[in-house]
Amino acid sequence: MTMNRRKALKSIGVTGLAGVLAGCTSVQEQDDTTTSDDGGADTTAGDDSGQTETTATGPAGTAKAWYSLQDTELEARKAALKQFNDNSKHTMEGSDVSDLKKKTTSAIPAGQGPELFDWAHDWVGDYHQRGFITDRSEQLNVELDVFTDAAAEAVQFDGNVVGLPYAAETVTLVYNTEIVDEPPETVADMKSVMEEHHDPGNNAYGLSYPFDPYFVSAWAQAFGGYYFDPEKDPMLGLTDSKTIEGVQFALDNLKPYMPNDPSYETQAAPFAEGNAAFAINGPWYLATLNEKGVDFGVTTLPTPEGGEARPYTGIQMWYFAKAMEDDGANAAAAQSFAEWYATNEDMLEQAAKDQGSIPVLESLAGSDALPDDVKAFSETVRKGVPMPTDPKMGKVWQPLTDAMTKVFNGDAGVEAAMQQAEETVRENWE
Image (tube, rainbow, N blue to C red; front, side, top):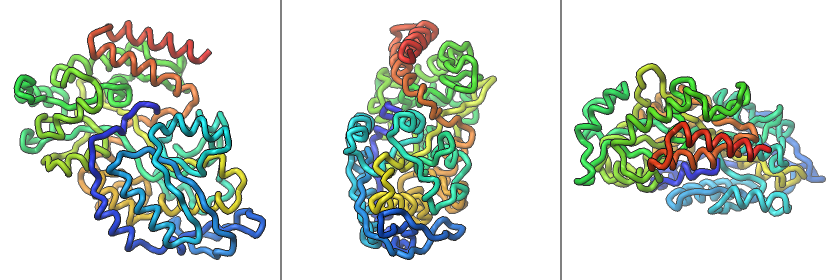
């Protein structure tokens, strides 16, 4: 997705993560991909945990990993890379890229891209079709059944395994425990609390809620609507009456209690400053709240009358880029890192505690070891709708984003804005 859904005001606590990294099982012991003398990949069998021992007979490789993170996330990522490099024969070089989509779509075709890049799963279909990513199903030493079903499915396309998953994401309801006594079960309950505390003249709001297609999907899909579904006829559902009903529901029931600007920064700030009763946001937001000292709880999205909130869900994954097609030592290095990162229980559990990260490793998903906040997000993920990986979806986001901005600002009605968005999408498809 090209929207900045993760452009969060956050500060990740990396001290705990760095500490657990230092205590992790040696990467070398998990370095289960080796290379033969000609650079081809050799593998050894793994155990049930997805972690294996290495024969370490092939040459060492050096691979590049690209990602697009907030400044406060970088220290944790650097700590992970250092832990791998310190304990593996291979070397991973990490780079933070400000516009990952622009960089990958220009560098990869020119043969200048990385071996790995980190993004949500919604690029899978488009990037596979364009030859930007490669299948590693024959080389993998990690069985996909160590991940949740949704995560395993997300990293596959047309029978190809094009990456490894490490976390899930979606948006759910966060509440200020100093303002809200009990988390609301219904939207009607939530409205009564927002009504009581909404006072924008005194910088107090009922709700902090970015208004864009990803965030609004919970309501657009709550009554049977959909943005895009290749299994439906028509596959484009922007003008479906149930989709329009859902977007209108969000405008009527939530917008009156929000700041007047739909952008992420403006919407996220009031709750993070302790000036809103509720927020709807993702797990990446929790570190900001911890850093700001906000007393908060996390719960599932409230139920709208006659429907069920069904937000889009994403799977964060390491993509196997085209540079891994040569299957040499550098590809082995990249695969070894991705396998280690995606199956490292200690690191993933600590990330859940420090960052609100939602594990997709089956041994951790829903585990009692996870914080209550992460359990609530996990439950919302279970009720959500995975973002489509079909290449056509890439042409839907921007027209739909424009429509959401128009309806929020009162520049167009929902039906008219969605009609224009659908016409634009169909033109883009031609």
